[in-house]
Each structure stands twice: as C-alpha cells, then as structure tokens.
Image (cartoon, rainbow over the protein chains, first blue to last red):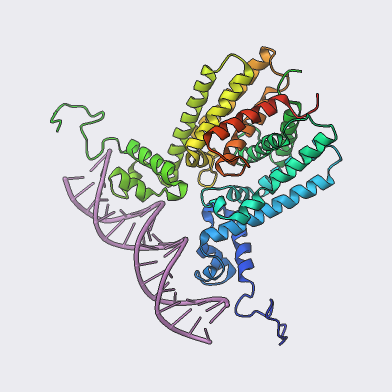
Length: 212
Length: 212
DNA sequence: ACCTGAACACCGTTCAAGT
DNA sequence: ACCTGAACACCGTTCAAGT
C-alpha cells in the first residue's frame, strides 16, 4: 500500500530496504536483551530479527560494542526519565522523594534486569571510552544530589557534605537493585516484596545506625 | 627428574599428564579472568594455558558454566575469608567493625574487579541452580548480620530489625564496590581515594540522614 | 549510500579413538 | 580413567561485489 511518489529522503517510503535500520537494530537488540539476556545477544541474531543480512549492522554500528553502547545509552535515558518523573510526582518532602527515587530504580531493575546489568557491565563496555554514555550514566547521581541539597536547604536533612550523602544513597539503591536481581538477598516474593524492602532500606539509612 | 617408584595414587608422580588438572584449570581460568576480564575467558584458552588439549577440561567440568561456577565459588571463599579476618582484626566496636568489612570488600573489588563482577554476574550463572554457590555467596550477609546483632546487644546500635540493617549495609557496600569499579562515581584517584570514600559512606549511613 | 554472499579465524561442544 | 584430533554448528568481522 501507500503508493506515494513524493520526494521525502527523510524517512518512510522504504528508501532501500528498511529506511530506519539503525532504529530497527536497536529495537531488536533491546528485545533480545530483555528476553534472553546478554549471553543471548549476538549481532547475527539482531540482524536476523531486523530482517537484514548478518553484515548490514556494520553500516550503522562500528562493531558489536557500539550496539551495546547504544542500547545502554537508551537504558540510562529511560532510567533517568523514570526517576525524574518519580521525583515530580512525590510529595514535597525529602524522605518521600528519596523513596520515590529508590522505587523507580528498583522497578526498572525488576522489569528489565538484563538491561540494567548490561548498562553497568564493564564486561563488555569501557564506559570511559564513550563520553556520551559516561555523561548520561551520571544523571541518576545528579538527581539524587539535587534532592539532597534541597532537603538540606529546607532543614529536613542533616547538614553534611551532600555529595557524600548522594554517593551513599546511590550506592545503596544500586547495590540493592543488583543484589535483588541476582537473588542475593533473603527476600523472596516478587515485586511487592522488593518494593517493601526498598522502602525499609531507605528508611533505615534515613534513621541511621547510631543509637540516639 | 624425581625417579621415585613409590605407590602414591594420591597426587604428584604425574599419573598421566597433569595429576591435578582440575586445579590447574581453575588457576589458569582465574588468572585469565583477572588479567583479561570475563570477555577474554574462553575454555580453549584455559586449556592452552594449562597445557592440555581444548577438550581435556570436559573431564573435570561439565561445560564452561561449571568452570565459571567453580571460579566464582573460590572468589566468594576468598571474600568471606578477607571479611572474617578484617572483623577479627578490628577494634571491639560496631562502627570500626563495619568499616573494616567495607574496606575489605572494596579492596577485593579494586584488586580483582573482573572476579567480583563474575561472581555476581547473572549473565552467565543462574546462582539458584548451584546450591553450594548460592550458600557461600550468602556468607557476607551473615557476617554483617552478626556484627549488627552484637552491636545492638551491646547497646551501640539503634535497636531495630537487624536483618533490615544488614540488607541496607550490604547493599551499600556492594553498590559502592560496583559503582567504583565501573567508574561510575565522581571520585577519581586510586585505592586511597576509594578507601576514603568507603569510610565516609559507612559513616554517613551510621549517622543517618534525618536531622537530629 | 546501502546491502549482500563468501570467507577467515575463532569458540563451545561432541564423538570416535587412542594409551 | 584420562587425553587426543577431527568435526559440527555457531559467532564477529572483513572484503569484494552488486544496485
């Protein structure tokens, strides 16, 4: 169908085969990652799912690592959006906002564990060699930092170095996410249990360990 | 040399070729992992380094995953020993012990990042399918838990669910270790900086976030 | 410009043999 | 029992072509 004969070299019209092969490869790769995990993600399979020869991806990605970087980048974007949205929808107090960040992070981890692992897997990607990826991967930290700075300014949080607090909180959330998806915590049960332990964990940090 | 003709079917004597091929493979595999990372660890290379044909490993490991499991197991053993030793050498108070645990964990991470990643990589190992690996991987949690229970009993720590505290602290330490080896934190500098941020992070948790 | 088939070097795994 | 060489199906990557 669609027998238009316009001159639109932009998109659609199927210029050759695909028109937007790069995006098709990205989508196919992400699907395979989510469905089968990183071990099942090979370039030839991605090409097959996108309906092109095993060699076509090299027109859009220098090598397999470049595709993995693009997939990781999209993952960090989605994670950042989720966190931003969670902060926006949370009540106007620091604990509620930090809890919202934690829940958003853990939900992403549970829904797409293979994607989260891939995003952080130095196994296959040297983040430092990909400046854009490096930059976007820092977004979570910056958003946590801002919430903490606001909380201190409003007098809700103890006044100490907010960067140290942000490192602590992000380590906490990221570590919890990784341990959960690796079945490394005593907690059983699915999403509800994971969300409960997330809230408990953040509150435990909030209250501290030292006896009052 | 060594022209003994004793009857010692135990070890040495070089029964066929190696005598202790399983251990030789484990050592070779761990070396490659530490030197080249998980991506560079293939079975044929392990066999080559151990001086046997590419097929010999299958006498001792069912498949590549079985070798990875054995390497991960040894890693968890070493980590548990380091933590146990750190606790034993620390002063008799809770904060000092928790700091010692954190430092031991982060030192392991920095010295052998590829090994730590491999130990926790659900990428290649389904921990639940290997009960012994699953059991040893929980050691860190149990040691943290014990320190916290003792701390509460001595009245040094706030009395709340020690399991929740242990989950929080282990998430914190593990997350910090992972973020550090993935160059995901603002901190630059090597080991000294990493140790400093570890202490700061644990103290930040110890003190809590809530304004007193 | 974008895509293809053939080819190369490699890997995990299996199998029929050798001692 | 323990080890080997040959073989199979696969992968990442490259290259000479095709439109």
